[in-house]
Structures are given as structure tokens and as C-alpha cells.
Length: 480
Ligand code: 4AD
Ligand code: MG
View 1 (cartoon, rainbow, N blue to C red):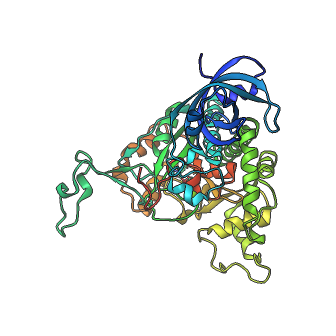
View 2: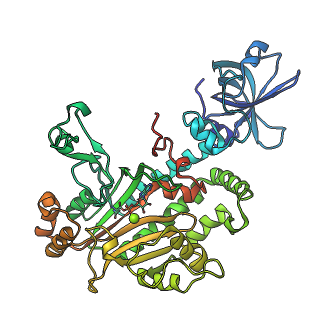
View 3: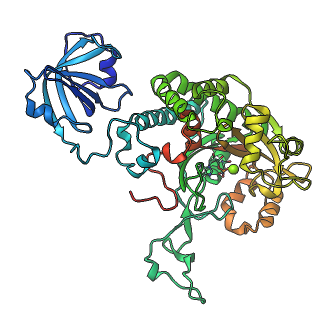
């Protein structure tokens, strides 16, 4: 017979039918009359209970069935007598496909620390927590494409190897086709990367935005969803060297319309998870509640994970200008007595994560969209406002996360753009391809970037970004 996935079996009412299930053993409990095997195949968080009668299944087979082993089970689907599951399988035959030496298999049926699981990233999908995370991650990928497809946006693949620095921040990984020894040297004897990619200087992309803009200037509404790379040496719970970003780019949108889209998008994704990932989110919610117990009182969340998700889905985000936010911070006392160390000359400074978190978690107690930032602290492509001090930028800040989206209206006026490039020491001749869109049929346009792993942190309640991507790339972490 054909294999049926456990998700389908657990929802089936075809009692008495013969089924074939395959998966990995989570636990086995046995006495001399019967063995109960909890089997999981990743299709759902719940296990299939397999009941094995030692008169039917040889002892030497049962002995090989240990936590982590892979088995194939044929048997009869029946209504379960036990608590906790509706159906179970009475095994008529079991084949052990793969052993897992109980002396060596690192995952035992208990809760392992996330730090330990990070060290065995190749095996951690076998845990309930990571099974849940990867299923939610898939659902979110699907929901991203559905959201934009429903609105007529086209998905554009932008290059991963590129000659441009989209953010102008210089945090790029170089790409080379040569052995380091063969790279030409400068006069001072340093490696000269000018000619590394078949004679051209290239790096891994930090963002698909600039290429996305080129597409939007023909197709109106597009989005990218690809890997992006940042060579910043930051070891935080919110930064990866390789992360996935979703970047919509829309012709004819001003900043407000782009903020509306960002808010609708985030609410859609949260609602999609609440509707389609119920079992996994319930598990993650319990897990997050357990974690809360280990936190200091003042760091505990007032709301559970599920309550936080529902709150974001149901409530409007607060929209505040950077200047208003600075005033709020100036007049606030985050820890009863002391004000922020941030003061008189604060206007113009970039907000630190403590400021962002104060605004979101303590002051407004809801997601916040900050807009109209000082032009000096934002990228060259952002549109200058009439005040000549600020640009039409926006950041969406989320509770527990901080910045989840960054975006702006783009500078569509050729002269102003060139002026800003020069102010940022970017040579306009190097970006002729970008400037051409401002010469030929330029149009107002806007866009933003959602950090997919930060979204995943919010949805799953995981505190460390390394735990929401299958193979995290951080400084000193790229073994496989
Ligand atoms: O704010 P960023 O750098 O903006 C851009 O790259 C623009 N080109 C986006 C656009 O307008 N099209 O990054 C956007 C988002 C951040 O808000 C954050 O969620 C995420 O990407 N992000 C990171 N996520 C994980 N690790 C990192 N090192 C990240 N850097 C940014
Ligand atoms: Mg940003």
C-alpha cells in the first residue's frame, strides 16, 4: 500500500482501514504485553501512536526501535482508547529503515536548550520546537507570495552577485573568482579586489531594492523575496550575516500609501499564521509561556504569544514622525527616576534599540511606524522632504523585535538624487543604470523591506534570530 502522512492519518475517520506510515521515533514505552511508539514525520506537530503487540512484532525488531530511529509501519487505523489522541495504529508489521544508537543519538525525549540545539543544527528539525518553526516558516513564505499575487504584484528575481552597494553602507561580502594568492596587489602590497569577478568588482547583495526599482519603473508593482547578506560583525539576537528579505517596490505610491501597504501586509501575515498554523502556534505559545518563567519580572511579556499576535492583527499601528518621537523620548523617564541619556542635541541622532523599544513597549504599547527621519542618518536614495532636513523614510517597529521593516519614498528627481549621491560620496557615473530611470519617464515611487527572520521571531516568539532560520550564518558560524 501507499504511505499516508501522519497529518492525514490523525484527521482520518476510516477506522479499520490498513495504512502505511513512515517516520522517526520520538519515544517508546513498553511493558511485556505491549509497546507504544510515538511516531513523527514532520507533517504535523502531533505524533502518531503506534501500538505494537510483541506477539505480532518480533522482539529483535522492537529492540531496534529507539528514539531517533526511522521506521515504516503497516497496520490498522483504530479509534484510540488512550488520552491525548483520537486515532492510533495497531501494527501488523514494522520495518526499521534506519537505526539511531541510543548511546550516541544526541536528542533524548526531554527539553534541550536552544544553545545545545544550535550546535546540532543538522538534527534540530527532529524536535517539536524546530518542526513547528519550519512549518510556520513555510506557511509565511507561502503567505507572502499570496498577499502580493492577490494584489497583482510581480515577483522579480534580483541578482545575488552584484556590482552595487544598495544601502551605501559598505557592509558587503566580496565575491572573487580568483585564488587569494592570484589576486593582483596594490602598490602597498594589499590585495586589490578591483578585478575579482572575471575582471569586475562585485559583492553579495545587501538588498534587491535598486534592481527592484528598475522593474517597478516598467511593471508598476513588484516584489523581491531573496537572500541578502550583511558583513557587519554584530553578534546580537536580531542580526544575521545571511537573511531573507521581502522588498515590494511600487510606482505611483507616496510614503503614506507605502505605510498603508506595510501595515496591511504585516496584519495579513499574522492573520494567516493565526488561521493556518493553529497547532504549531499553540505549541509555541506554551513554549513561550515556559520561557517567561526564566525571565526577570521586568522583562516578562504582559501578553502571551497568541495574545500578541491577535493584538497586532486587530489594532491600528501608531504613526509618529521622528521629530515627535524625539520629543516623547526627551520627556520620558524610562526607569522612574532617570531620563534617557540622549538629550538636548538628540535631534539628528539615530535611535538606539532601547529608544525604539521604549516607544513601542512602554509608551504606545503597540506597533509604531516612525517616519520623516533626518536625512544624514538614512540612505542616499530616500526622497528629500521640503524642509530640507528630513527624508520620506519610514521604519516599522514591533514589540519585542524593534525594527521589522525599513522603507521610504524614493528620490525620483534627477538633480536632487545626484546631489544626495554626492553628499554620500557615491560616484553618479558608477550608477548610470540607476539614474537612467530618473531621466527616462521618472515617476514617484516607494518601497520597503521586511526582514523575514524578524517577522519569524515575532510570529514564533523565539528570542534569538538563529532559531528561526534552518542554517544561521553569523560570525563564526558557517560549518555547513
Ligand atoms: O533597513 P534595511 O537595511 O533596508 C533595506 O535594505 C532597504 N533596501 C529596504 C527597502 O526599502 N527596500 O533592511 C530592511 C529590513 C530591516 O528592517 C530588518 O527587518 C531586516 O531587513 N534586517 C536584518 N535582518 C536580519 N539580520 C540583519 N543583519 C538585518 N539587517 C536588516
Ligand atoms: Mg533599516
